[in-house]
Amino acid sequence: MRENKFLIDPNFSWSIDKTLATMDAHEIQMGMLGCPVVPSSQIREANIYGAELVRQHPTRLGLLCGLPTDDAEACLREIEFGRDELHCDGFWVNPIRNGVKLSDPSLDAVWARLDELKAVVWAHPDPNDPSVDGRPGALMEVTYEMQRVIIDQVYRKHFLRFPRVRHVYANCAGGFLANEEIEEQVQKLWVDIAAAAEDGIGVSVRHLGAERVVFGSDTGAPCMCMNVETMEVNRQAMLKWERELGMEKGTIGMNGWQLFPEAAARAVRGSYSELE
Image (cartoon, rainbow, N blue to C red; front, side, top):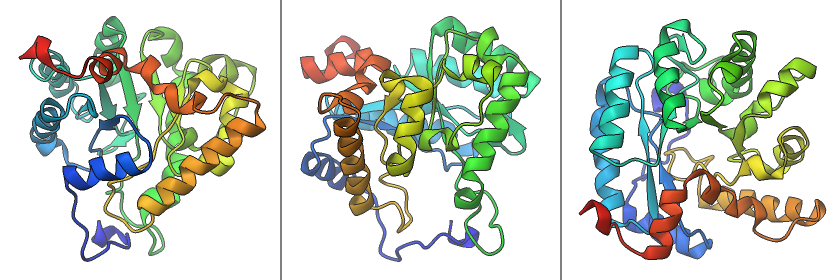
């Protein structure tokens, strides 16, 4: 990531204990683990590692299994492995992976299977994108990459052909460019508010409805711009928007339970016993 011009803290390290302590300090019951920075060759390893952390902390963590969307056959294998072996709560993808967009026709069989499963699929830009003008490519391109892919999905009738997939786009989907037909399809999306709460919640609520907006933090990304302090700024912006929109406190923060009912049940039950 340093090669791609991210300002990485030289002392950065990630640990589950530190993550759980941060969640406690900021009143976060559960976090969904996903690692959208790994190359396709390491996705299986990352998924297995995430599953082990969930087994150790079932009431605090959920698992989104990564899918190598540059290879449809590998995707299909990972979907079944994630469901049958890792008992994942959903899946993560990059909008574009090695030049292959989520809207690419080569992935139709993948989306058909995810549609059968009524799967939650969370899309997050790849921070390994090459730098642009000496700046991190992911930060420069996040809005445009999201929009390019979503608009291409709209033109390909993706959300109409795979209506049971619960799509979640990070960072408020980079904003919305909408006409009547686009509006009809994007209403099927969910968005998280990571790095975009202050400016993105109002737009997202207007286009999607408050029930399709979920809290996101980007915490754990090894770059100085996404640290615990900025997560708290994001959380406070969420609370402010809830007040301004006349919502009960915690409305957006609780929406994630609707996407991940099995994770919600673990949090209430306090165990992973049925999988042991």
